[in-house]
Image (cartoon, rainbow, N blue to C red; front, side, top):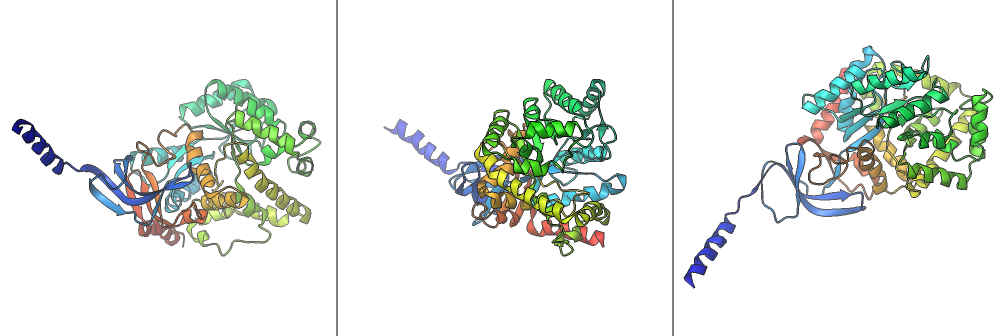
Length: 469
């Protein structure tokens, strides 16, 4: 009997002296927001080692932590992603654009998708410094310069027309190690656009962009466009007259804005359903950008001079707003009314796209030249617009984090609160599943394991306000 009793006693003593789990940061008793299943996982402990989530546990595990945060009564979500931003404006605005990094982090935006500009060397430098921990900012995924036709609208764009020019441009983007290719439609020809898509698809490079009205939606989707930025192009594919309107644009008989009266009048639910099914089948993502649409559609009613965020924006960036403001104020009453009706159609499209299974990405289109669409806070505005349009708060959250990571093939690292994922997290004071506006109620930003509390986040914005005076 004794020879069995002694080992059992030693085992019991050993259990009492069990070593605690070592972590760098422990977030205790936090409510995890599971947007994928639209539920709350209550009172969990999150153990972070380095820049990754190492443990998600209930209250039974014992931890030794270098740093602790009491999450009682708080809510945890993955850091938000803005899937359509711009760094641009020329060399004189490099520092002004770099200031955006603070505004993103202060608003809980831990990842951004830079959809093309003219500051690529600076952006790539920031991208590298952030990855090394030498600069505080969101993880940046960039397209580098946009691809467009001869004499493009945006500075820094690569001009392409022939197959040789397309191959050379894509070669240069690959040498920059860009994360995706952005195509713009100001001057690009129908053939060049489709040939870019074909070449990128052959090279297994993700594409994103506008779509010239000389191209059918079906052609863009079936040739491999990865994400469609803005809803103009989706609406075109919902029209029973799309082919007729496309031919008129090719012949020069109809322009971009002129076509919308015809498109809105010929919207057809059955045609739309077929377009949505094609988008889903080809895994084509859609970026609605409802927030900027609302801002620009109602510039005749709101001059934004009382916006709190104006104080955080560099005067050089504010100067770039003047073009859009002038065009809006000089627009005819008919054009203003058409733009507002078009915005409402876009709002109506969002829940229809979601119900059809099309993957939606939340993107603000913030940056220079886009009047009063402020970095950071505008992503919250976009989520709120999606909920107003008919998505649930959980569905809206998925468009920022989960879908954003999935589109770029980064879902193994980002987009969910799970072990092994990057510790880019937000601690909120209230439940965002009850009210999407609670994504603004940020108590902490956890950035790769680094903790920034509410006071530090407020200092980020106040420092910009002081610098701009």
